Length: 509
Image (cartoon, rainbow, N blue to C red):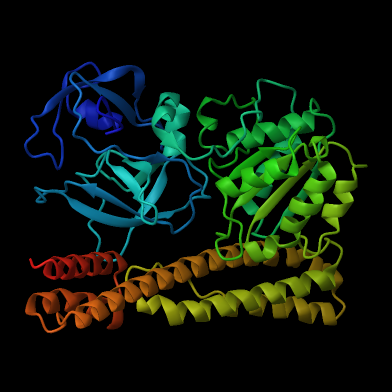
């Protein structure tokens, strides 16, 4: 339910209930005393599923408003690999419905608009009974998508892709768009080789990569190509974008998390735009985010923008795990040299074999450290998707390169070092994402432990630590958080149940 008049579901669900021209019966979950209503598809708001996992939306309007409903908070947000989500559905045998938990997967895999949902641990399979239901971000509770895929339920169409098909949903959506509206493209003359190059970069570059692009004037073919790639990589804009004939590399929707047009904007404007969409602080950065800032030398304060915002980001890109594309109009702009000279910028030059070997060694050391961390932390939780152990094999390949380099076989090294880099880079990226997932699990468990211990202290203070009812509620939460692998969603429920039971007894219940 979006408001008392409107609701959102999958087109194939409507099709199975009578089709887009039928009067549909709507039951209001959780409002047992409310009679079912009647609804029809809003004109122009029927998007049947298409090939390659696209579409599958229907906006309905009730014949009579229902004021008692709870509104779903649709929200734009950057999505991340392994992000924990939940959905409420009615699988066979669950008369009153059931929650299921999953993680997002395959965000950078070429395909359609839908994102794969991988259920966690012993969660209910996301099969029949979940299609058309809201997918909630576990941390914020916001609706970030909807379960799609007839009879499978293992896919989600994100809110931003929904907006691309049904802009009308913007009336019920919060959160800033991923791409500034000025990144328009309408059959301009584009530099197709640059489109291919940019598309490959989005698909292959690792976190920490920084790419300085000099486009020429705003009307140049390269500038138009940059805008085209940005639009095609935007979940919200790509459904309506026209792809030039002969273009064989199209970026994955969602492969750019934020694109900012700096033209005419102050440094503070750009900084605010970045911070409202992305958390790029050391404590909150999610590895793998991709940021594009274009028109830098046409900004209102180009020097200050570079000095105070972009050069700092470029220098910390590897630590933050962010990828940057920085677009300048002119090679002579002072900001170009300033950004390129930022400490820690990008990888060694192609002809710096010694530097590339050092980078490989450092990257493989990082992968090995993450694998060791994974073995220590992942076993403390249920449902963690383990990364394969790759560091030993990668180190063996590096040792072959080093031996050939010592033997003076430069031709062999040059022929094989690129393949090694292309294998190591995604391993580092996967590892950084896994570390972020594990860190998040530890933080959430520690928070639950702190809540439980605080409530236990409160119970002891009021003499309720020996109360049988309070004790029965405490023991499952304590066992889940301190004994054996922890299933966090179940632990959250147990801690909430203990808190509710304790407060009821404190009130004399």
